[in-house]
Amino acid sequence: MKRPRPARRALLASLCVIPVIAVAAWQVMPPGRDKFATVQVSRGDIESSVTALGTLQPRRYVDVGAQASGQIRKIHVEVGDVVKEGQLLVEIDPSTQKAKLDAGQFSIENLKAQLQEQQAQHELAKQKYQRQQNLAAGGATREEDVQTARAELKATQARIDMFRAQIRQAEASLRSDQAELGYTRIYAPMAGTVVALDAREGQTLNAQQQTPLILRIAKLSPMTVWAEVSEADIGHVKPGMTAYFTTLSGGNRRWSSTVRQILPVPPKPLDQTSQGGGSPASSSKSGSARVVLYTVLLDVDNADNALMAEMTTQVFFVANQAKNVLTAPVAALQGTAVADRQTAQVIAANGDIQSREVQTGISDRLKVQIVEGLSEGDHLLIGPADGSGG
Image 1 (tube, rainbow, N blue to C red):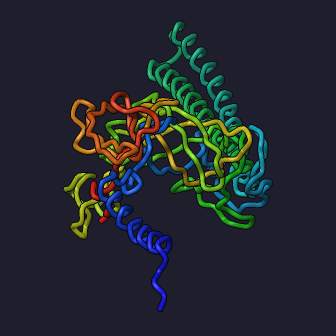
Image 2: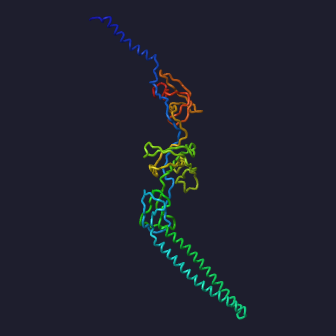
Image 3: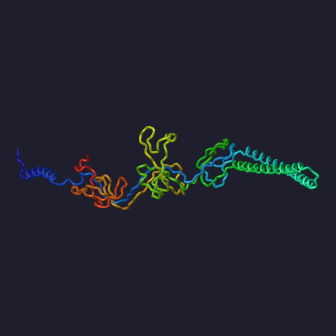
């Protein structure tokens, strides 16, 4: 058996030494920051906002009802039609109203005829009284005949006044009947779009007890967002505050607005409306805690009719915002923010960990503005320092 040559022995020895040197080098050199879970400080835009869900409604609308009873003869519009102010919308059968109007006119004519008769009686009574006065001056009549003539004159005058009053009363009733006849033709009280139609041709309406609603006309621009803001966030929302919202159908489009009004009282639960006690913020019937929501109103132009009634919106009330500033994830900072200061663990390229005090600004709950203490590109530790990730 041949022995290995000296050159071959040297090669084998060097190959055995290389792994040992590599292991020793790994133990001496720092592991580097690749062993840690880190995030980088970067520049970007950030805003502090309150979010809420809302519903779109027309800012201005009117419910059109019937002031006259009767059967609907004709409806001239449909849902979605754009109408002008004064446009004829609905016709109700006017037969009953016309009959009442005719009866009122006949009553007035009858009263006027009776008034003319009474005026003739009054003229005759006046002549009788004048004749009795002349006879009394010559002593040719009794005093009681004079008194009788005077009383008859006053009585006829009183009956004239009575008929005149009855005529005025009948004329007032006639004007009411004329107005009721006019109510059988319903006109648009304002320009807008028909958004609801609750009646149909042939339907009989009874306006004696309450006004039956027939349709609703609304102006679709501007629209109003009725946003429901939680009790925890309502203190951050103020009138005039900048806001924007999105819709499910609008894609990435944003509609900008400002807060017009904050309603001071939240809606009362239905299960408490008939109870004597309990406030809107009390717990529900089941005993579980109820989230109190306050209504905030925002107006927005809708010239292109992209917004529709009852659409669901996600509203963002902007409390503060900054553009092109240093930001870092909230998870990369430790400690509770006191005087806008927290701590960050900065990982150097060689794996050294340095603790820094950081001054922070506004936050959107995911990112926070870095005012001082960090630089763009710094790597911040977000995992355990041993790099195990567990």
